[in-house]
Every structure is written in C-alpha cells, then in structure tokens.
Image (cartoon, rainbow, N blue to C red; front, top):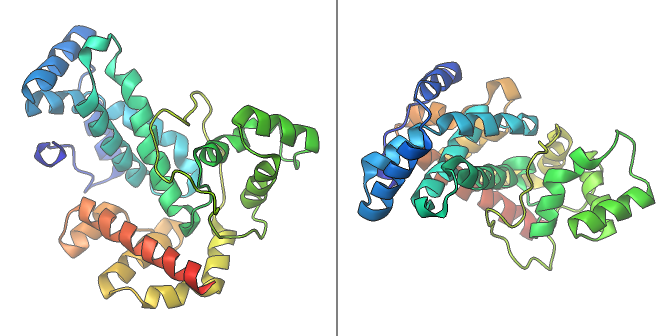
Length: 282
C-alpha cells in the first residue's frame, strides 16, 4: 500500500512540510468511517491516502515529543508516518474507535523502534519491560538526584523490572560506564505496538555524546572500515557529524539518487553490521 501513496515531500525545509501537512483538513467521524470502509472492503488506495493525509499533523505532534534524543526531527516524522500507514492498513471502522486513537500506538511504536536502533548505536534495552523502563524512567524521577533504594524499588515494581535494571538504566542515562553487551535473556526483540507503551508522559532529554565516544574507542573506526563506501558515507553523514551538520534521509536520498526509504534500509543494515562487529570484537 505504501508504495502507491503520495505524501508531501520533505525535500525542502521541515517548516514547509509541516505547513503542507497541516493544510489537509481533519476528517469528521462520518467521513473517516466512510473512507475506512472503502479501504477495508475494497482495498481503495485513494481512501487510504485521504485517511493518511488527514492524520499527518498528528504524527508531527507526536514526533515533537522525542526531540531530546538528538535525532533529526524529519526522520522521526518519517518513521511516525510509517506507523500511521500501518495503522490505516489495519484499522477496522466497525470497532467504533477513531483512527487517531488507534494509530497513536503504531506511530509511537515506529518512532520508539527508530530511536532504539539509532541511539548510541547499541541495544540498551532488550525486553519489553526494559524498553518500557527506557522510555519512562526519566519522567518518573522527581528530580536530578540519584534514585534512593526506596525509589528504585517503587519504580521497579511499577514497571515490572528488577531493581538492578532500574539502577543500570539510570547509570546509562547519566553517562556512566556500563556494559554494552545485550542481555542474554532476551526473550522478544521485536516491538508490539500496545504491550509496552504508556500514554501521557513524554521522554525527557537524553544525552548520547559520552556513549558515542566510548563506542569510537572500542573499535568503531575499524567497524566502519568494514563497510562498503556508500554505507560508510551514510553512517558518517547521519551518525558521526556534529548535530547541526547531520544529514537527513532525504538529504542523502537526493545526493545518492535513491529513495529515502532505501537510505533508511542501507543505514539499518550498516548499523547492525557495526553492532555485530563490535560485539564479536569486544
């Protein structure tokens, strides 16, 4: 479905994209139900496109809540749009729920997965409970001070994780030197849209620079040299430049003459290769 749809381009400025997305009218419940039934019953791509375009503004609003991870806003929006497309494809108009209420979980899930793939270049949370801890710990802390044992136990109980996992995650957020190895008891490395997300609290600002330096010291350069020239260029342009010079998916798509989705695929594959090389070489 996604290949046949035409969405506003991000080739220009982010501001112009946002203006374009906000120009599409919000559908009434009756209009939404009518279009969703056309899609559900007849696989009507025109109906799907109208549903998606009318909800782009909601993706932008959700993506703004994830500015603190140091990733380009345009990329967060694009990942959220992928989640919106998946939600539209799965939306059942007969359940009596508005599309925006159903789609928010899919939008957040795609953004969360994008952050987890790219933040610090390593897996820092492997189980669903640890992911929930990752996205909620900072908002649950009352201040900047280190958690005391009572607070650690309370958060661990509320989120269904071990107290030592709360302590370790807090150390990661504070830039402490902790193991980069993924947990050996990883039961499920895939995201499910509803099982671990919580509503209401936006993640707080997290700093990645200290961990990135550690990764470089542990052989990042050697891992980069194992990549082909195009993959290495994409990683360097998107992950190893100063924040203000970081290239977006669309910047590289224009430069290399391929689609933004193809750039995202190459980047994901290269990041996995780097992670694998660093894990085996540790």
